[in-house]
Structures are given as C-alpha cells and as structure tokens.
Image 1 (cartoon, rainbow, N blue to C red):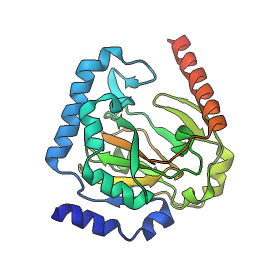
Image 2 (cartoon, one colour):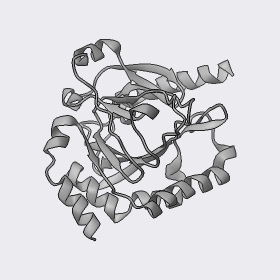
Image 3 (cartoon, helix red, strand yellow):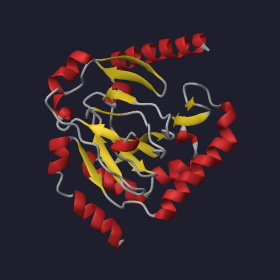
Length: 254
C-alpha cells in the first residue's frame, strides 16, 4: 500500500504529463511482477506460437521482435486489470479504463527493428481520444539499445496525417511534412530499468531506433482507453484497408 501511495502521490501533479505528453514513473512493478510478465509471455508463446500469423507476431533472425496478441493471455489480461494499474490509469484518463490491447516489443540484441515515428491514435482511431499507453520496461531500455523516444508537446496538435510504414511490427508512420514542424524540438529518450514505466498520450509522437547493441530491449505495453471511448469509423476503415494491403504485400514477398 505504501508503494502505491508513493506512485499515486508522484502523479497527482500532472503538469509534466500535460505539458510533454508523457511521464516516466520509476519502480512501479516489483521483480516478482516483472518475472510474472516474462513467464506469462513465454507460456503464451509455448501454447499459441504455432497459431500466430504475420498480423500478430513479427520475427527477425528467428527471434521475436514484436507480439501483438497478448490480450488473449488470461494471465496477462488479469494483470492488466490489476487494481494498481486501474488506479494509475484513472489519474490520466479521469475515467475508468478498459484494456484495448497488450503487446510485447522485444527488440532483440543487434537486430531489433526500429519503430517509425507515429501516434498511437493512428492505430486506435478514436473520436476525441482519451487514451494512454503504459510502456512497462522488462529490461533496461535507453538510447543505446533502441529505447523509445518522444517529441515533447506533440500531443497538443491533434491527429496528424499518417501513411503506410511497410515495416514489420508497424503499419503507420507520420508523414514527413508533418515532422518538419518538429525539426527544432529535441526528442527525449527515457532511461528505464525493469519495473519502471512510461505513460504517453494517444497523440504523442514517438518512435524508437534499431537495436544495434548487445543487449535486448524488452517492453510490454498496455493500451488503456476511457471506457466511454468511441471509434471514428471512416478513420478506422482507412487504417484497416492500409493494414490489409501491407499484410498482403508481405505475404506476396514471402
């Protein structure tokens, strides 16, 4: 209880989040909780790995780079609905949350893919989006091993135009002309250790570099929406069409 009080006290002042569009909170999850997450992921892969398709899993050199269907794991879905996570998300959403997705971004040593700059709402397609991503560090993550980076304040500009990325584990990237607006903004790459989290707004521009280091960079994300969120139907149809075309191209290349 003392730890949860410390965490909630730390985020009661949301000025930094409102200003930057992201907030790092240290030491949220214990070593045992991180072990539980890692063990649950391995158990899910052992049970479901053969059934996963290119929409749900992406490999590089026969190693998992990203896994997008972890909400199907009963253990991880229960974890995502823990009281601690609900209380934290309520501060940011000012509402009760629902879990939209749970994903692993494993980014293995030397070969982990870069993630292009994007907004999460380019995938979620919410009307007046009130949503956050909780990025949980399962290993050390920093600039040297492809840590996530942010454009501070970029969430204030609404939904930016995106285009297909044609990158495994990603299907959307913000258009180059939009990025020119942020050319003078210095990106921020949080340095995280296992158990730390970074929470970002659904409209905060972010991405990550390739992992050229000898250390893997594992993180699990929990996507949380205001329970009353509604989908922008035309935006969603456009996104799904783009995703379908990219998946077809990947199949034809194989």
